[in-house]
Image (cartoon, rainbow, N blue to C red):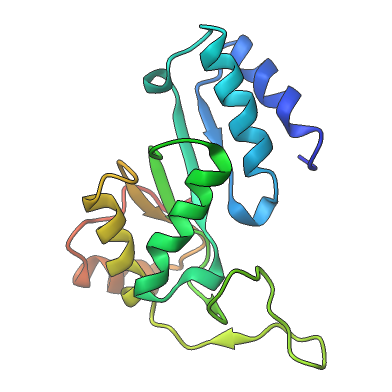
Length: 160
């Protein structure tokens, strides 16, 4: 949903029984989602532990040392202490930094050659620190999944 519209949608969804909330930094509405979730918790409609909240690591946080920065940005946006599931949104990387779509002078997106196994090691780290209960992937193909499974310490719980 567009910013400004998602908050009421999340509140209505929680009111009618939805318990899985899926969001992503790239959608630009994590703060609004978090505001709605916290409002429903404050009203006593749900407890945090009743919800399953998913978000996604954006392409500009794929360096090992940037993964934690990415999830902390998401947690700050949502106003939460942990996620239930954190996904690598895409198996490709943009230039490292806070800009979602870093661009060259010609307007093209600046890509960076970061192995998704490096990114996955960062994902395992944030899981081990308790910033997320589960980790997974999104938009990976079968070859990428096979390679990841052969080289990971913590297996992804889902490929969305």
